[in-house]
Amino acid sequence: MLQALRLCKTLGMRWSDAVRRADFEVYGIVQPSPARRWAGSYGADGSSATTDLGVLHDIDGAFVEVNTLSSRNRIPPDHRLRLRIGRLLPGVVESTGGSIELPLRLQIDILPTERSIAVDGETTDFSCVTVGGHGWAGEATMGDGSIVEIFASEEVPGLTLTSLRELDLLGLAV
Image 1 (cartoon, rainbow, N blue to C red):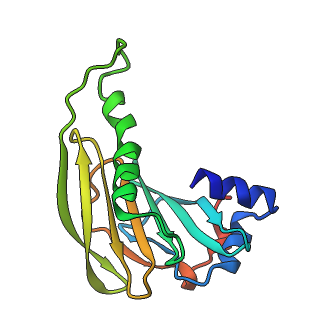
Image 2: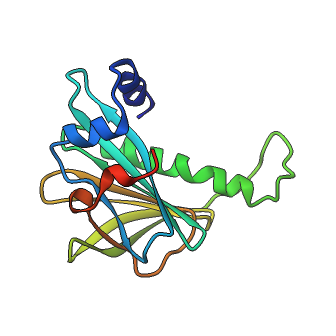
């Protein structure tokens, strides 16, 4: 993802440009209603075609990121799982209260779970993981082959996602 972001910056592409060039739906949370929503990460391939777009949400103090990966984004599933686990590790370290000693010795329980989340009015099963009980991350493949990833700092009951093509994407804080 970092390489894709660097490529976009090299190509002079902004998040709003990436949205316009996306040939896939971009998803975000509509329920519970986010207090704030920001433009997140984005990436492109060598031909400047958008490969992924992220939207960040603040829901009652919980931080939730929703990334949509184009079907062209060919990161293998096991590698995506390792990346999701890695994204959750800072929450485990923060849970120590800031007083850590190196080498850091933590026992981390990685628990696979399933969650059903409404996406565009349809119940969608997300394959999820929690790490040490701090936050969760999940993914599901949409009908067009794109993948929706969710990273949540804590539980947010009643998550509902929708395609943001209908909303004013360019009104996001970028």
